[in-house]
Length: 221
Image 1 (cartoon, rainbow, N blue to C red):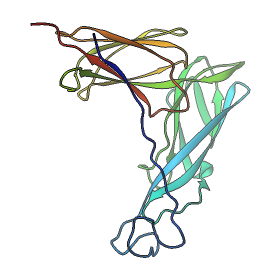
Image 2: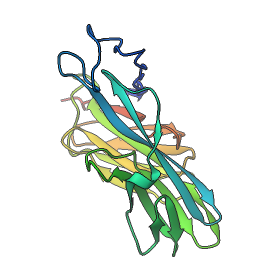
Image 3: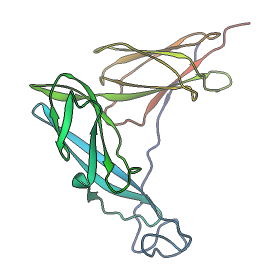
Image 4: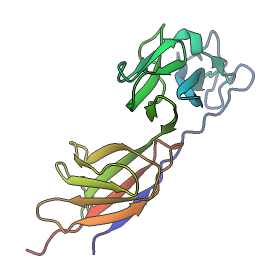
């Protein structure tokens, strides 16, 4: 029987720096760095809510790690806002997404001062006159059930109880990613020389970091 397991991602716990010293540092922080030159890791956290058929988004700048500033800062007007398809929806002012046509889009924010500081990506199904619906980011990993080696080139099929079916070939890390509705979904994996495996999941829109692991059992020689 094919082995099927769920992966539960462990969220990073961002401990706030107390006073002027990081919890894991042996010396005081000066100008955002400790005596060994270590500083915080910045990131952007994005929130989007429907505004009629459009989206109103905001983004906050946060830090984690050494000498992190525990206070988030609003960064909405300090970010470049990106829509994956400007013919469907476009940002006309920072954080304000205007829906033009029906379709599926992905949106994210990028720091104007540092292009490497970006928010997570969120995906939505949009249409004029309808409230946007956020999609779930479904990650799938396929591995040999015996050796635990991830399998490149495996076929993964996604069949949601609502929405279109999708197919993906796993990458060099044995992984696939889908955007789909947050409804009960069947995932099937197959690869030459293995018995296929499947599992039913109900993804969450609020956890893009989670995934499902499908273990394929080798066929008898």
